Length: 470
Image (spheres, rainbow, N blue to C red):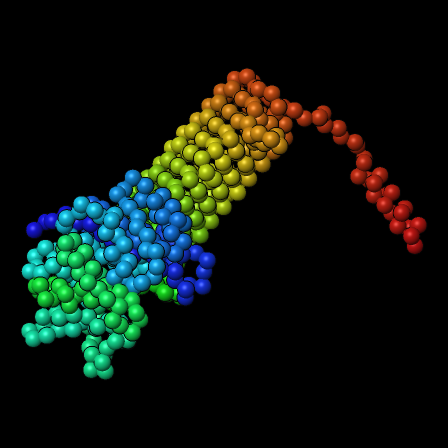
């Protein structure tokens, strides 16, 4: 039965072992808050509603996650006191008032959970004969985890936490991963009957497994132990990041992307990369990035919230942020493409060129040592080495506009606001403060003076000074 599906994601913990002022579920993992991953998986599993239960730093967690899932049906519930996982899930009941269907229960600090496992879990619940399905696994060392208790025929009878387990129960290798799908009516009723009869004095969510076993058969889906591991400290955060990074990189390589050194390549989840793209060592691609097909990204480059068109060649150690780069461009090495930069098709940006809020139209070139800020560079325009737009007067920013086919000589200063017409030439070493008409030559230099014999006279003066010292 394909009943409606909702999810409760527990994000209320403080995370004391993180040794941080930041709530644990907000710690970044490949560019995303840790809780982003289980919430995203819940939506991928088909949840029509997701409730994040918050507690520690509730407002900060709500603000961060609401921004990350803007426009999606994510609601929040507050666990007022840390009274255990059972109490945390019960806190979400009001946010799901009127919902009848199945409720998926996940954790904000379990980021490696896959869509495949959740799909299998939901399918097992819908095909089962009981009010609950759960995930289990068999780690190499089950110490510290709740054990799955099975009776005759392997039927699940309940879960016992490690601290409450008998020596015989601690020999059980199958552990409870803490991930469930439960019928909503059963879930809320079972939570109402929980009592803190355990070593911790908390309301254990795991106690609902025994209650479900009395009403029907509890379906179990086994998962890779690494997939359901939580994060308790920064060392574990780094370990989870390494596994997640390897998983993401493998997916891209299987889709036709070449990573010359996957171990040093960092690609955020959600980044899109076309086939036949080659990514060099020590490259970082984060945020909402889209990389086209046949792109080359050289060693050490960094891309943040950037689009790169098909066939573009990014040479080593170039940095992009909030930029749009068209097809068949050449950028770098050591270029910096700052927010608001747009490079149209076939643009060349060379070594140590920096752009900010600047559009370079088709075929424009700035190949060496330039700063182009708050500017519009026309199609086919060539910007010489050492050119800068003087866009800031100490109070306001002003725009520089270069028309199509303009030639800008080296070491030119364009003092904004200023416009240069189509096909104009600017002589090297000029400081341009006034508009330049189309087709004109603009130059602003002092007249050159050559003093014949000056070098020989200077040499004699220096020799005379040396003799006086002796």
